[in-house]
Length: 263
Image (cartoon, rainbow, N blue to C red):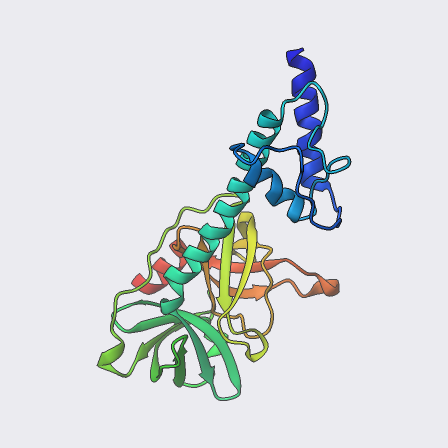
């Protein structure tokens, strides 16, 4: 009997995760109003993910309603928790993200403290650039350090008003962990892209990169790459452009950035 229950629960989980049913809202009429699992079952039925026969919530005789409802509830709490974590991370880091404008060039960057912004070297074609924040504030900045090898640059903001602390940083990156890129693709400032780390140490032309699959377009250069804890893990500098490739972006990892800053 226990094995049968496990098989049925597994089957139902697969159904819940893969179903594309788009039926209209179904509120199961045989669920008591005071049942603790009523809300969770109604939630998935309203989303069109699961339906019952003749508005009855009776999968079969081997799995009780409470058992199935508990599985559904845990599943959707997990999904909602991940979404909320993404929302919280973006809210935490957005004040540190900037758009960078240099002549005809444009890109993005991130505040790393002491009035300094980190960006990609090929973004700042001039020594003086304009920096824009998400709250519409703007300030001029001056390039104080460049590295063609790493494609990195540091811009110092020319205003004492913009000398707040920098974003939190980490050099720990895990394969397949979720990452967020916040950039200025095609003149759409502060666009958020989400993906995973595809490779923690991709070596191209003797340089080390974090490879990830979040969307990268023209204007994303120099944009920060964050984890879901709101920590900066790298700076986006390029994408794979061969044969129409998509989902292959590269960011300079923080340990390489730190070496550039210290040297």
